[in-house]
Amino acid sequence: MSALPETAVPRWRDGLEQDYAPLVETLERLIPCMEVPLHLPWIDAINALKKERGAVIMAHSYQSPEIFHGVADITGDSLALAQAAADCDSDLIVLCGVHFMAESAKILAPHKTVLLPDLEAGCSLASSITAADVRALRAAHPGVPVVSYANTSAEVKAESDACCTSANAVQVVEAIAEETGSDRVIFLPDRYLGSWVATQTEVELVLWNGSCEVHETFTAQQVRHTRERFDTRVVAHPECPPEVLAEADFVGSTSAMGRWLAKERPGRVAMITECSMADNLRGQFPEIEFIKPCNLCPHMKRITLPNIHACLRDMRHEIHIAPDVIERARAALDRMLAVGRRERV
Ligand code: 13P
Ligand code: SF4
Picture 1 (cartoon, rainbow, N blue to C red):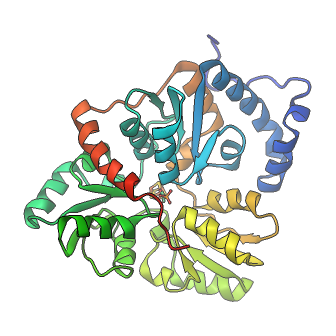
Picture 2 (picture 1 turned 120 degrees about the vertical axis):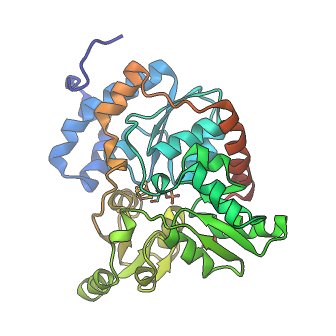
Picture 3 (picture 1 turned 60 degrees about the vertical axis):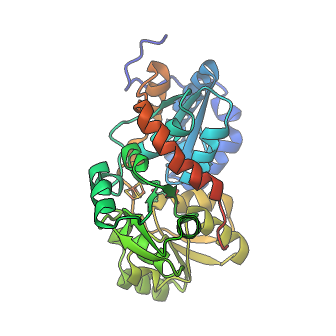
């Protein structure tokens, strides 16, 4: 095992740029080109360690392009990563995303080792609610089923009837309402996603007061200004406040935004969501001009090439969850996976 300190940069080697020629071309379009040679030795060292360990690296769409394109085997929204964790045949998963995503992987693949490069990679939504809060909500609304956004801790999932992501929130709410015969559902913790879901269904929602610290900072005035100044189409994530969503041409989850672009092929688009999402989609749609909002998620950005390297080298930081929590949280996640991805775009 290497004795390199975490900050020691792996050495440049001859042929590196040639070996990674297609990646270099992609990255030079997405990030400042001077950064590319700085990333390549890390990418090369991570790919070597990944092979040695038989690991699979999963990266959320909000990860920086050098991670998303450079080292990830599986990329996507939180639903895609959860599905992949359940399905992949590697016993070692490195989750490049935030803590709740690594927990979902562990819950769905409890016999696998799941590593998160930085345990401090949290989420303002996940930290807005505890398992005790869910029990209190249930006591206040007896018999009303609970749907939790995947952006919650394992303990909160364990108290829930079903989980959802933004890709299937409406469908999960309707499925649970039908299954339980209830015309009300407790939906937590994102009040903005919840109020958007409420506009898409007849089911009445009881909401919690959580919010995403990244999406809640967008304003309607910013969106109006962007549209007028750049004559652009606008797509927004449903974690944004309602007045922002009202200004958008399309509201949809991480994956639905990509499908909307594929269908509509706008000449220019402003993505009202996390900034790296636009970068990564720019790689996929080179003919579309992206107006970048540049709201970065500070938690997602805790994941870096050096800490992914250290994570694989030292087998850190492993996700552990109590078996009884896994069992109960799994039932809620399985219900979400059974509904799957039935978005309207
Ligand atoms: P997705 O469920 O669309 O991947 O989003 C996760 C997230 O954290 C959005 O801010
Ligand atoms: Fe959480 Fe918002 Fe970051 Fe997504 S973007 S991980 S919801 S803080």
